Length: 205
Image (cartoon, rainbow, N blue to C red; front, top):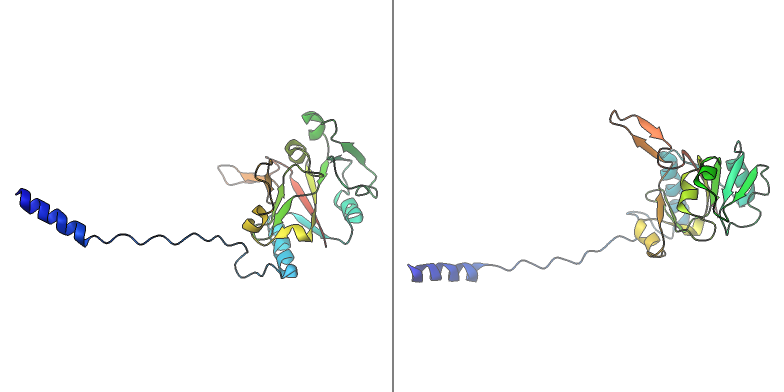
């Protein structure tokens, strides 16, 4: 009996074929079917995705006039440290500088926040903030009702891997894909629950 069992196991081992090694995973660095160097196509996809989420996209040559348009109707705006000078010069509301940091109550009572971004993703219509100059603290970008973000065309990558390659993972990254929204158990969509109810992106060349 022992010899028969040994022989059976020997034959099983001899017949066993080792599994083929898995091919290395290759992550797409660009959106499928989209040439990263075709900047008009990348920016068109970025605009399309943002608008699908309910955001507003303003294409502008200069930030100042577009920022004034985006802030129309707002009475106050948070300006993070490092925001370029002159962006709010054409707007007549109150600019509240977040240095020293404004209290949460003060932020909540402010109509809008104006920021730059660290990178953007066309495929998902995503803005990435890392707290760098002009981007501010996470609280400052979550509590006001309106977020106006100025994005340079060169910051827009077709897909997420391209954006991740230029980001510092040690920094506090915030990913924003459209205005904040959620749905309750009855699938009723509610905006502004976890962040700004409105998002306006100013896209510069």
